[in-house]
Image (cartoon, rainbow, N blue to C red; front, side, top):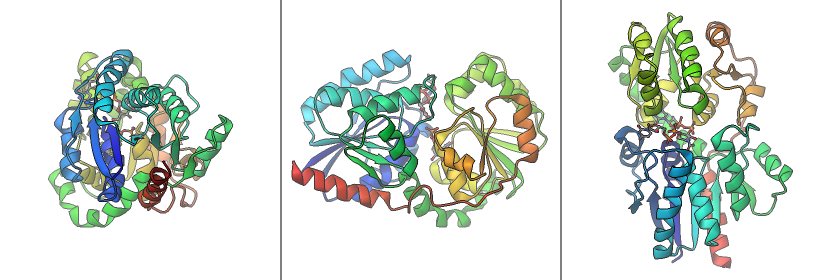
Length: 359
Ligand code: UD1
Ligand code: UDP
C-alpha cells in the first residue's frame, strides 16, 4: 500500500485536511504531521476531536516565532520525519508558514508534493501567504485548484502541468455540515444573540494586527451599536493587550468577545449573522456559499469572484469605510457555483491514486 503524508499546522489546514483524509481512508496508508504552528486547544486539538481526524502521528512542536525561525524549525524537524517515514507522496494545504516549510523540505528531498488550494493569488507580495503560495506551487507535482481563475493564475506563471481544477475542499466540508446547523440554533441562545440581529467579526492578518491597523478597526467597531460577536484569534488578543486596546471593546455592552470556537459553532455563527466582517480567507468563501454578506478588512482578496458577484466588499482597515459598509452594504448579484460541486475530495482521491499507480 502506498504511503501518503499530510502536513498541516494551522487551523484552516485541519479543516481542509478532514475531507481528503476521510476520502483516502482504506486506499492508502496515511500519516499526519502537525508542525505545531497552532497549539492552543481551540486552535488545534479541538478540530481533530470535532472533525474526527486521526490525531497527528508526529507533532513537530515548532510553536510561534518570526517567519524565519518558524519556517526554519519546520524544515529542521520535518526533514528527520521524512527521512524516517519515506512517504510516496506528501499533501500540503493552503498558504501558511507550515505550507512553505513543508514544500521547501519536501522539494529538496524530491518527494512529490500535492498542493491543495493551488493557484490562489491576491497579487500582494507584502502578504506572507502570497510568498508561501507562489513557492509552494512552483515546487508541486500535483496542483489542485479551487476555482477556474486559479488555473489562469498558474498559467500566467508558466505552470500548467499537473494542474487539476477540482473545486474547493472547504466547500466539501461545509456542504457536509450545513444540514446540522439548522438544528443547532441553541448555540445562539447560549450567547444571548438572535438570528439576523448580530454582526460576526474575525481579525487576524498581520496588516490588521499592527498598532495602526488594529486601532482603526477597534475604533470602527466601538462606533457600531449593533451586537458584534467577535471570536478572538490569539494573535489579535495578544495585540489588543499589547496596545492597550482591549478596554475599548470590553467597555461596550454590545461587543461580545469570545474565545475561538469550533468549526460547527463557527458555521452556526456565520449562517445566522446579518453580516460578516472579516479578514479571513476561509470565512469570505463560507460567507459567499452560505449567502451572508461579507465585509472584508483587506484592500485585495484572493477570492475576487465573491466581490465580482456583489456579495463581498473590500474596505481595508479604513475606519469610515468599515462603519459605512456595516450600515449600508447589501449584496446585489446572484451567487454562482464558483467553488465547484462540493465533491472535490473524491476527485482528488482519483487523481492521487492514479498518480501513485503510475510511479
Ligand atoms: C497563520 C497563517 C495565516 C492563516 C492563519 C489561520 C502564516 C504566515 N500565517 O496566521 O495565513 O490565515 O494562521 O488562523 O502562516 N498564537 C497563539 N496560539 C496559537 C497560535 C498562535 O497564541 O495556537 C499567537 C502567537 O502569539 C503567535 C501569533 O498568534 O505569534 C501568530 O500566530 P501565527 O501562526 O504565526 O500566525 P497566524 O496569525 O495564526
Ligand atoms: N474558524 C473556526 N473557528 C473560529 C474562527 C474560524 O472554526 O473561531 C474556521 C472558519 O469557519 C474557517 C476557517 O476556520 O473554516 C478559517 O480559518 P482562519 O480564519 O483562521 O484562516 P484563513 O482562512 O484566513 O487562512
